[in-house]
Image (cartoon, rainbow, N blue to C red; front, side, top):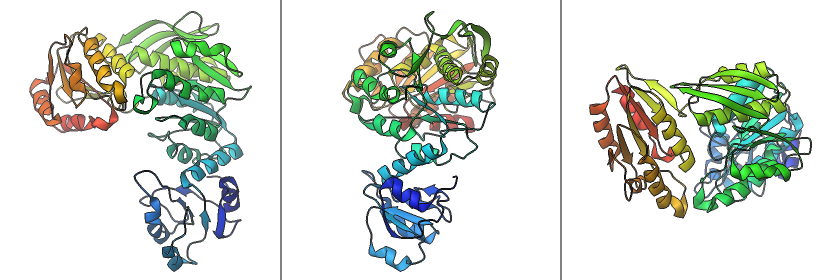
Length: 458
């Protein structure tokens, strides 16, 4: 963190000083006593299933530079005056976001905010790959895209950072208002609108209404990067007050792709940036990644980045972990790990790419549940089964409480349902040879990486 004082923390969070030196520096922010360092300011966050106030003694023992809490307890008395500072706030999660929003505005980098039902992380990594060659760039790490992760990312900003790329992930109504308010983006991207988080959002229309708040908060001199291939997003062009830059596969898009060719791990296409046309050799597979590259190119074009730099960044972007990540086994077989997350749209995209790629190889698909679909879950899994019935694959293995519906009421061939992952592992170890490629796809909560780790060890 750059220089910021305890007084600024108190002011930005509307907190109350219990004791401490208002001029003392805030060196770092921590929300986890397992990782807290000497001098960190510890925010005791409270959620539906946890309360970090239970661990403030541990934070003090580890040398916390201060505590941000919602209540005082007698336990704190025995550490006085060894704890340098205590601040009491009404809500520690909200205070964390308020302080992050203040810190973001104080440093004032150019912020690119990304949301969407799929493709957020890959788009973020493509933008990072382009911008890092131009100036110091900070981007969200791991899954730091929620009301806790987003502020923690922002606290990593330093004065050297000209660009900051932030993922904004939502699961319930109202979250985008808060996330976008903290991030205060200059450029906003919605990759697509899909059937995600229906457990709380209920409908795809609600997903759309929530995500467009990212673009509605943009300043007049900001830029909305619009995917005009998405029917929900195409109509936004006339409704936004900020500048607009479109991308897609249609001729109307300012940034578009043509002549797409996919070859296993690579994707080739012609990239049009206004009047400039560039040949792209992208080390990311799949037509869906073309859209991710287009959104990244459009965002960087809005920032004034030249075409050759955009081309270099796209072509130099490394594969993203657990997103169509190819792992080569000693036998010569390939495992494709796309098990970071799954929704109906991303499931179809991954399977379509898989069916079109790796000619001459035996293809096995291992799929699990798509989570957080609420009352639409059974219908969406049945619809996936109908989709799979038109895909030509050697074998399809299903594992999960909901994915079993994909096998019912459809003409799905060459498929087997396994109640336990261990049963699939036995089957795979029998079937995999040097000519095999296996795609793993499921929501993160299905822990399909265990499959892959086991097979790699085997």
